[in-house]
Length: 155
Image (tube, rainbow, N blue to C red; front, side):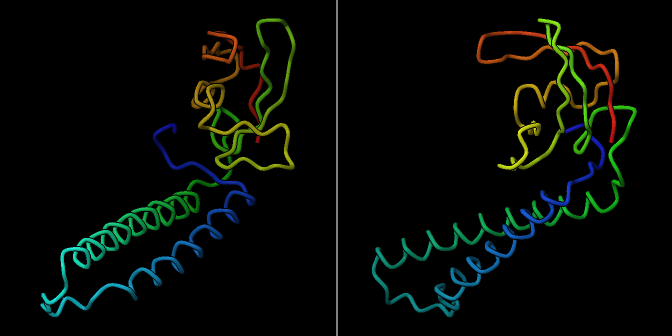
């Protein structure tokens, strides 16, 4: 993102908390299938391969849980979106090369009910992050390389 703590919208927080709950439930299920590690080597190679696969899945779940927990902690200290530079949660008016102005909101998670939302993972979202009013950003759109001017940044 922009290198510092980024704010998060209420909808994104809810989505992350829901994903965390699902991941923790899945982790508990995977953990319950692992042997206690007591040294019983009586299983065949297929059993050992299954055990290794579950241990790998448990590690993947732990990484994702830690990532989401960290994102929520970061958002808690970030405060509201800046009106000086574009960040997560900013409302940005952009002027495209054809002269049209559009106001978009930058977010982390796509919300079906918000047609003005641009995710920070999209080409335009990535290009806008960290910029100020008056900056020209370049990005690759479906039609090829293009540019847009940041007209204003609001919360």
